[in-house]
Length: 139
Image 1 (cartoon, helix red, strand yellow):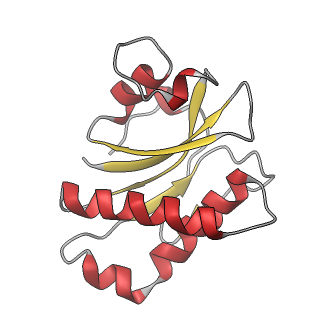
Image 2 (cartoon, helix red, strand yellow):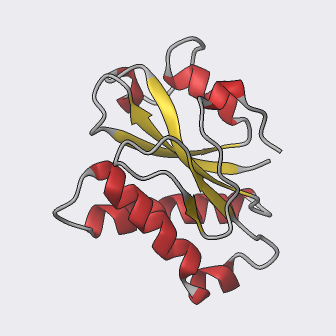
């Protein structure tokens, strides 16, 4: 399963990181230093937790396009915390008709996990659950 995810630093909650992976649990362990291979940026603010993710992309290319757009849209928003910008950006992207057409066979679904912005809930038609990501299996 291809997933585009947003990590939030537990050490510095204002720091976020967006990435894509086919095995999010393995990738999270890399970002946290338990395995070799995490992104250079994430080595600074460990430990990380999954704040939200978008799943069910048909192709790796669709996931990378979404990752790029998510980063771009959230950077252009101003006056809000990084976490809030990431949440609003993913919600906007999933609602845009142009993006849904681009994904062709994909029907991406997003879920917000433990929202530190005071929000817990869903984006789009997401299934919501709380708790640490490592404690749950992704379906």
